[in-house]
Length: 248
Ligand SMILES: O=C(CO)COP(=O)(O)O
Image (cartoon, rainbow, N blue to C red; front, side, top):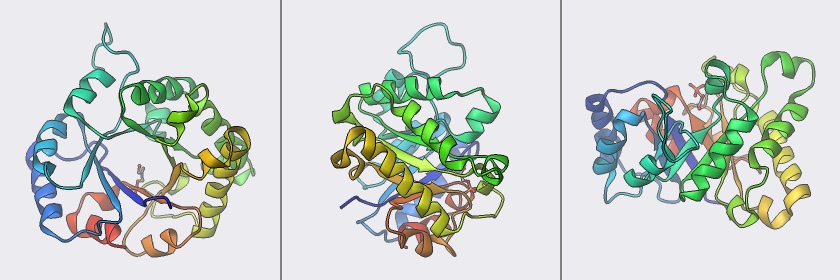
């Protein structure tokens, strides 16, 4: 049985003060303890949010990192720095980073390996553009992204990764992939990992759906056979909505 994982990707939102208000609101309410709840917050919020969630079962994540431990990489944050804050997850290869910050399959792979080396679980994002979907290439694209991202990772570590299937055309647009379509791609991802690394591994890896997930569609999404959770943008910025997602 895979534990469902609902992760909020706050993106570039919430000052420290705003972050603490949101986390306090989330903490106040009852949460389904069978669901792993993760907050992926801006770097500047990590330390304070970490203190605020201390003693709860809420997990903490970053939204990006470099793959080197240290060096002349102005403006970057290393896995070593994140490890010291004791975060649990890091989002790698989000489509916004691929689109605006030249993230490639190769850098995604380096970052995923670096995260695992430090015991930080990578949430690896994959997904096709609208154009790719309309030309029927979504499986080809997603297969390439997934296999490249995990290439060369020690097999015993593969179970620690989470994959987020986020069709780009469904992000922040209000358009959701139908839960059947999302499940179809997610089962396909599990199948290609199974073919390459064995069923034992593919059955352990959790695969989320992301793209306009909200309280109104979470149940339908989570009812699908292969979808293990959600990576949520907009709806994770309000305590009330995020709690409804965790308590689906
Ligand atoms: O990009 C996303 C999560 O990483 C999805 O964002 P929205 O939930 O706002 O569509």
